[in-house]
Every structure is written in structure tokens, then in C-alpha cells.
Length: 415
Image 1 (tube, rainbow, N blue to C red):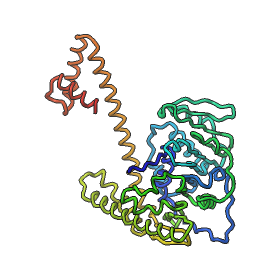
Image 2 (image 1 turned 45 degrees about the vertical axis):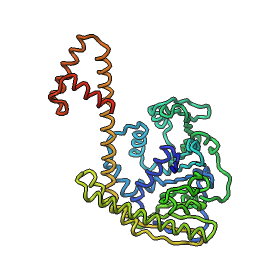
Image 3 (image 1 turned 180 degrees about the vertical axis):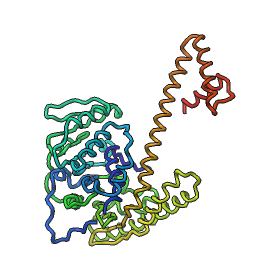
């Protein structure tokens, strides 16, 4: 049975962004029970205490991390996304202006729920609205100014199904709301909920916090009709919440995942699920490491240090219980992350460039075929002479007739 998580790309990117940069951080001691609870800042007051998924990233802390600085120094190529380039310009010209990123999906029971999400970007000083609007205009789709000063973007790649409202009501925060998320433009009712500890951890200064309310995730996670591998870790799906944090531990990063439960018996089940999950991860990483060690492809060998680093982090992970909570924790070495992550960014950019060039060639070739099929015999003769000349410079088509070259190129266009 397939279990789907209908999370929009933008929200998923926030999680990926958080995970990649985790290595540049390091551990902050856990708040003692006697410590006063920190007051929630405005961006966290907008988050419901039972949100299906929640992520908070302290951008100011990340930008000072070693991994972040190395990635920024290595990744200077222009982006295909105009919005990314605008963000780069702002961060490089005034790196201290970005404060935090908060994003959440209120509910994720049905596929359509993934269309409703909120992202709040907080700044330490007033932002430039004009730059943000300019980036949105270049991103494609229809942009409409609203009477309240916000703008509504209808991206072309969703066929008009998704509307994104960008609000500039707060001079220190930009709000992004999709689907039915307008209801979350105001503070949510105060009170404890499954991810309240995650909100408090974010308010206390944890660099990265991720939370999930399991009751608001797909019911398929808790049914008996799941694959055997999923069944081994299924007790975690019956937790009240899962909360992950990344905190400083000198130059390294301490990663902790906490399963919150209503009874000690559930905590024991979650503890067993954590141990089973770690064993599965060890086996998968060991197999991947061996494949990378034996491969003859140099590009794949670049990821061997990253695989070994992840393997060491999984092997050193410790599982314990704390009352009704089950905890899995490990430490990641920041220095081990830098080189493989830089190589990964470079490979991703090269792959995207190759895909774009290939697509461009296909478009040009398709246009030529259409022109050849629709014009006179004289033009066809010119076309044959041209493809023969091109073929002489192509090792793939040397020795073929114009007709053979044309058929070979047509197969390429259809691929």
C-alpha cells in the first residue's frame, strides 16, 4: 500500500534547507523544568498548537555556521529561479536582515490539505517590498495587487489551482499564505497542544525545530495494511507528536527526535520503534557505502565521505526514555559535511544545466523537423545538405545518410 504525503514543494524545500544546514550548528542545554517558559514571538503565535507539520529555522544562527558560509562561498552561479537570485542579493548585501523562517501545514489528512500552508519570514529590520514583488513578477503566473497592500500570485505551473497571498502588513515579517490559509493571518488561540514544546523550543532559541502532530497526518500510517518495514516503526505513528531539534554542541550539531506520548507504555513502544528504525538505517547506509566504495564512477565516489558521516551519526545514536517521551539523539560533525555538501550543490547545478541544454536542443530539433515536413522540396534539399554537414561533426551519426540521421535525431527528440 502506498502512503503519500501531499506536501507542496515550497514547504518540503524548507525541511531540506533545514537538514542540509544542520551541520553548521552545534548544542544548547535543554531548559530545566524550573525555567520560565519563553514568550512566543509574533511568528510563532500564528502557528496552531496542533499543526500537522511545523518547521522553524533561525536564519541568523545558520548564516553564522561554518557549513552555510562554505556553501555560500562555493555557490556563486546564477540561479534559474529569479526569486532565489533576489534573496541572494538581499542576504549578501545585508546578511543580518534575515531573522527566521517559520512554516507550517495545519492539517494533512487528505491530499487536498497539502494545498494549504503558511510561511512566515521574519526580518531584524524593515525589508524592501519592491524587491520581493519584483521577484514574484519574474517567477511566472498572474500577480494581482490587493487593497490591503498584499499581492496574490497564481502560479502558472499549478494550472490556476493554487493561489498564493503574500502579505506585507508587518514591517518586520512577510507572510505567505496558500489555499485556505487566510484564517491563519491572525494569532491562534493560546493553549497547550501536541507541538507546544516545539513552539517553546523555537522561542528559546533552538536553531532548527521541526514538529508533527501525528493525529493530523494521514490515517494510513496507523492502519494494519502497511508494508512490513513500516510496521517495524509504526508505533511512532501513534505518538501524540514527534519533535526534532538541532542544537549547538561546540562546533558540532546535536540532533534529537522526541516522541511525545500520553502513557509510559506508548513511550516503550516508541523506543523499540526508534531502535528498529536505526537498525534499518544502519543496514541501508552500510550497503550504500559499500556500493560507493566499489563504484568506478568518480562522481559517485564524491558522496562516500557523506555516506560515512551519516553512518557514523546513526551508529552513535542513543535511544532512551524520559517519562512518557522516547528520545533518539546523535551528534553530527560539521567539518565532515562541508566538502560533500559543496560537491552535491555543484552536481545538482550541473545536472540542471544539462537537462536545460538537452531540452533546448530538443525544441530546436523538433522545430526543424516540423519545418522540413511542411515546406517545399527545395527547402528539403537544403535541409538534407545541412544535416549531412552536421552529421560530419557528430561521432554518433558519422557514416549515416541524411535520412538515417533524421530518423536518429527524431528518436532523440522522442526520448
